[in-house]
Image 1 (cartoon, rainbow, N blue to C red):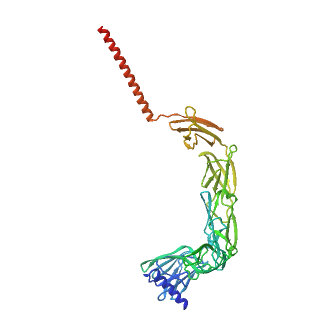
Image 2: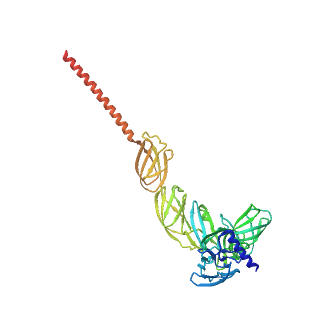
Image 3: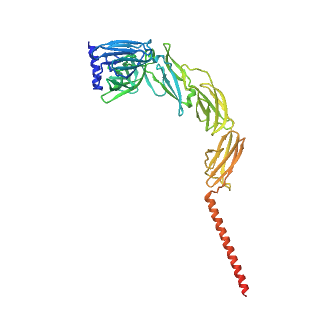
Length: 495
């Protein structure tokens, strides 16, 4: 009787607190003590192992639970909380429908235990990022970043906190990371309920930096909670005072993982590319009721390029058909698979690789690429050294240079680049000077590119004006000479 009164009181409290206009006849929930109003068009997510409860606020209500296959189960719900359905291993996953005279509520049933864990890889700057998805019973063990504390559902946990707090007993909350949102229509009126995703309240005893607490059972709702505890990420919030809380990121697994309680875990891992050849990923997972740690090499093939005559290379790039790659200095990293299963297949991949140095194609390689394998590849290149000088042979401190139409950097009037053998067109410009030449590069070569004065339109106009002035001056001089001769002739005739 006490349970019945408490359930009805909780249901009425939800109605009056969060939506004064709600007057629904039926309440539903994940437990027999905390309920939500039945909302037409609403959607709730359940997992295998969880319970669907219902209670009527008035008289008996008839409900029909429809499976994804279309099977119908008719139930009568009274004013006492009733367990409507326990979703188990035989329950079909997918969309269920709870139908009443007030509408239809949709229930999305998932079974994470039957989801195969996968790892997704991607480049991020100078790092490789690995992320686990599906298969929530798999985590990276002792990661270098994004750490969470591993805790076990249904038993007492002893974990070391990441922050020192005074010894004592504290009230704690277990929360799911995302806020809970539930919406739909109740008797034609839009309804929305949003709150923290509270799983339950716990007592936490702290002594010498160690916290002792008992989590609710897996797929069960804890004291004062609304949602069931599930495998995956969660939050442990300690109420240190009225205004001060301590929140720890935790990851919840079942009792099979008890030996790893308190370990740092994560669902993602970042690895610097420069150290990746010496790194293995440790994945803690359950397979066939056995718990173990699997060591994985990221699916990267590493190519290290060098020039036997000139040593290490710079400004190197590659392009690989249908594969992502990243190059740092003289080393290229090729991602063989963006997504892979656990355990990982060990077969090789045939890769066609275009190699560029300073933007010029050096070689096309066809290689058998295998994860974790480092291949050293020699490249035969020639050093082209260029110096820009003016018509008098003086060094031009600044300038722009193009090699086969590609702009390259010039510092203090000179530059050097490693290039593959071939014919190159050099074009340079420095202020009013410019010039070009063509070379056949077959060995290390040094050249002085002599630049000559370039006349632009202003220079041409100036020259034309000067020529016109000279012409006018000459004409004026001729005119004066002719007048002088004519005057002399006239004077002779008069004598």
